[in-house]
Image 1 (cartoon, rainbow, N blue to C red):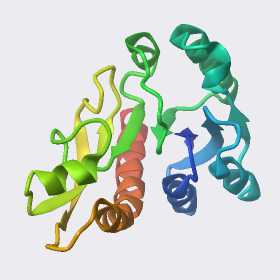
Image 2 (cartoon, rainbow, N blue to C red):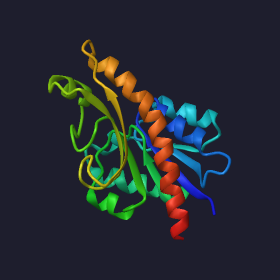
Image 3 (cartoon, rainbow, N blue to C red):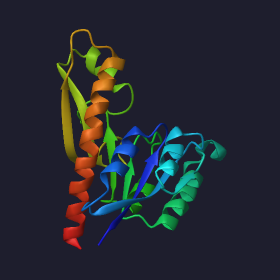
Length: 194
């Protein structure tokens, strides 16, 4: 059985590319859709060039009506029939109603060692706190912001001369390694349960 994966993005999609590239050979999953809340997201072009179906649901059209936005996003996802949804730089907070429909089937990557530094500006916050390490976490997405069970983490040292930008660049390298590994494990476990 091959699982179907939809990937949600908001920007360039570098994590999405690594996920797509990983789903080959004996991998138990394949990408079926890349969707974005921004129709101009560069990641949509990258996904299309890799032969993946793309879609966009521009959140700005809904004037802050999250329910209406999520209803349209749900329709796009329903059409693709994914077994797993991977949020990869998807910069929208999803409601409990939406996440509840996908409970146990949604993954997210976050650029901090959760539960530390939920939300934005994670690298600056880690440096300002005087932490000696930072990193990234893949977790199941729930209604709690950057909550949900942690499925994997990767760590990098914070160097004395680090800026948020230099730290972000090193963490991103680890994100590109971690997310595909966690997705594969997650998909393999899902297949075994069926």
